[in-house]
Image (cartoon, rainbow, N blue to C red; front, side, top):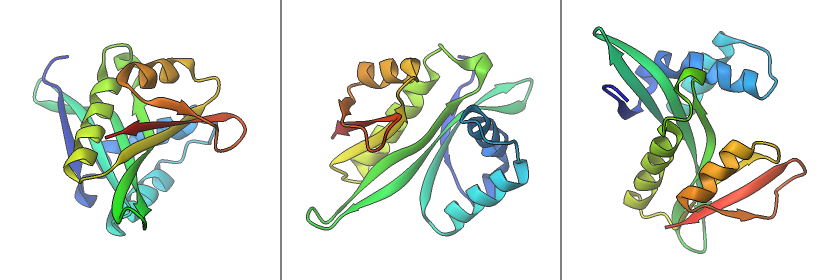
Length: 157
């Protein structure tokens, strides 16, 4: 993929992912609301409740966001560690099936390793077979669903 960059963003860069986040919510049958997307992402970053990685490409000196992943901390009192949960992963329709989801997940895994986490986890809909195939190919193991309609996956670090 030409000029692909994956970077962690801060609150000043929410605009890079707001439209993708809105499309992600639409995928999960929520109404489009770009302002809500911006407010939600801004709050998560301002409150240090999430880490966001965005994938961009550059075309004619224009930066185009093409995917993102949003990680939430999962605290372990017994392990005295912070583990990570992939709350959201989205790749723009025109950029799917090109390995971008895998690159975003590998970025999240490397981040979690550097943070000394024990695992990274995620959930996906029972009927999201493309995502399930990706997660299992990378090495996530399918676990008992946390609630009906979703599978839980875990990647031990």
